[in-house]
Image (cartoon, rainbow, N blue to C red; front, side, top):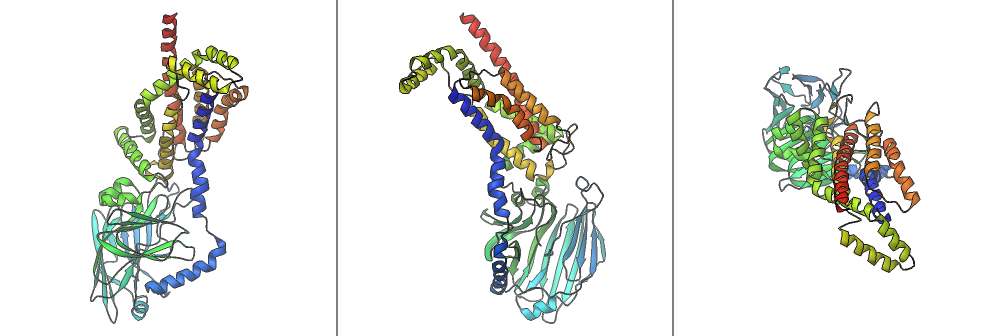
Length: 504
């Protein structure tokens, strides 16, 4: 293998492992960093936006719980202002200590405000009444909340379902301009590596994603999905009829969203984890709430395939292994060609050395004769790079799935209790290093530069340490890929040895 080929393989290998980490560090994290120097400007912007959109701030009064809704996996508390003041999720794979997860935040779901300042003040003083105090949800259950103000009567009819979604009907005794919110995005899973904020989907399918810290006061028309989201959870509204949505930033420039109308309203709401199957069962339009950051389109389609494999075998670890096998089968023609080409380059090493000595003072002639030699023997110095380069988006997609997919959170495989976290015993990283070393040993090489050879030999050790803290599912993918590469390279080496012996 010549210097150019070796250099390209080294570069391709490095890119495949660090591309996603570099992008997250230099692009995603800076986008989420709040600027303290602009704090005053942000507060002024909030005040201006409130005045422009006439969303009156609530009057702070003490509230009490008037309804409790109990389902198998969640508990809801509704306060005297007709808001979901608490939504506690019972998800055992995340709550090892038995505590339920609170998904409501500062701005409560179903909070309703009026443009008319006088009516709005009354709305935050007069309590709602409920037709039920305690509701148990087996399949579904309905409650009716009523608030009687001097100028208007409001009814909220809410039907809760066992999967966490609900139907909401807002009825007014007369038309009056008002705003209603799905609530602040959950804060149960917030970190610097993942995006969190607000997603608005319009009826033409276009998405507007507002990351925390980037919100500005604006109006979005024809919205059908309005969702606040963190890494794994969401609180959202969905409507078949396009609606007017108002966005304005809070004191930290995080988006708060309201639907604005003056008529009766029919909505579907959901609070809970972003399981793709659950969201799709409510409505397929909600699948877009599951975002994977940069490369979402590719990651989503990769998840569809991985999810299909999981449902077939019942284990995410085995599904990842099967995914590697499928990818290897698809790339087999290119990989086979590349490996054969690398073997031929090794056989051509003596002739290449002769040419280098003969034309060492004439680089142009050396290049011309080298290319001629490659062509005559069907060797391609870049043949080993292409299959590896094609693996990069798949490797990056797996990383994104492990980062964002709640389905893979807590997924176990053999000794690993969570494929989205590091291997607690570092067994997989060590196996990856060993398989990488063995792959080097049986891969035909012809180093001309001693420094390159030394660097190449240290790569397994470097990547073992580098991948030690990466998600175990990612290391499983690459370790399996290495094992299949070793097997394929061994077979090709034997075939080429027989072919060479036959020629002799």
